[in-house]
Image (cartoon, rainbow, N blue to C red; front, side):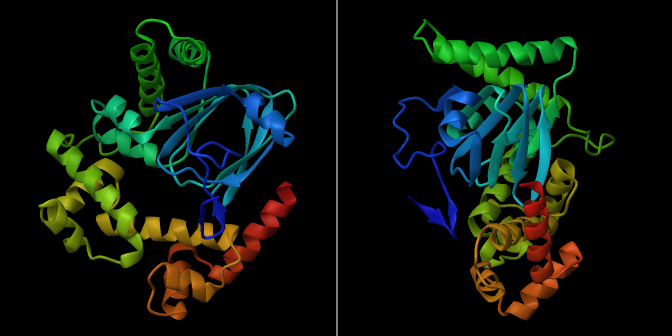
Length: 299
């Protein structure tokens, strides 16, 4: 089984083999997989896969990176690639899990603009009693139904239903800089390219100007794009990604502070500790101890 610093990476939870499906998405009920594991899905990651979990009935205790929270009936969880996640479902839990390969996600999201960057963070959304929420409930049900059969235009219909769910989620995100003009299509592509470069090289500590040069724009322009799309500077986004990986390593692996520091490209553990404390208000050692205590209380 492939590993990244001790955290399992699965195509689908509990499966070591490559994803054999000829298509770029997968749909199953929550019970179908959870029953096989006593309703508990241990923390793991997916590479190149985006997941939507719709809890129609019952409850669940979920773990997302370093935090735990409760999930109730009528909630939808979006889990991007490489986010460490795990679930402990109640035995009456019902709903659907839709897994989408990123090429398909990008195809569906192509017309959604810079707001799609929000899909890079795990988020919980609650379905209400309004018409749009009813459409989303129906979309999950229809995806499940279409996935199980081979009707004409099946793939096109599934893509349209996935688009319905994604648009519903993006519409519920708070507006960022509503008083500023939206970025252009080229700006969207530049911001997406920056996010991809950060994902590939966050541990190398490239300067903002270096990222901007690779994209073909100035550092100042890159910062404007980041402010418009994510309400953060380019450096903030880089630091946030480094911090996320540090938290994952501290919580889910037995790596020493020195090993975490080295894996993230810091010149020495003291520098890493100062960076971590500046970002979180606590030392890596204290963060690890606090996370362990919180998780033990939640189990």
